[in-house]
Length: 148
View 1 (tube, rainbow, N blue to C red):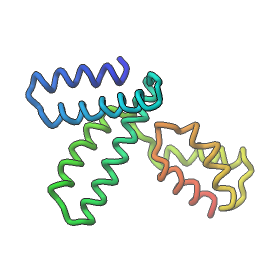
View 2 (cartoon, rainbow, N blue to C red):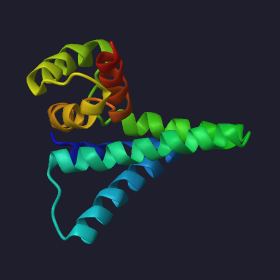
View 3 (cartoon, rainbow, N blue to C red):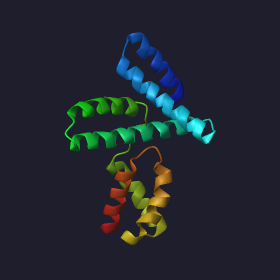
View 4 (cartoon, rainbow, N blue to C red):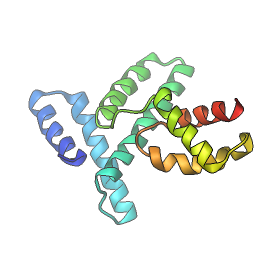
């Protein structure tokens, strides 16, 4: 079952169970997917739907950080709940330990010697890890490998 169908199925389940938080979050995700399709005049495939959900999850992480900085624990709780729902539809993200050997291989393939080659390494590495690893984490792994 693809992600869009899973969202629709979970929406029906949440409505039957009376889980308004989950229902509202799933509706928000479906609306975001539909908005991208309307704006770009395309029908998203499974990877496109996952990319939209990943973008929504990233927005929630940023909102949580902003709310914590502003001292608003009431907003943090709601955003964390939405983030958990978003992440449940995303593939398991890779850890730094899993990214390191792939990054080392790309660094040797590109012939990178220092920090000035970060862009070339990231350009080769990110397509391989698309949707499976956080870009910030990948960047920090690459920087640490190029510095040593």
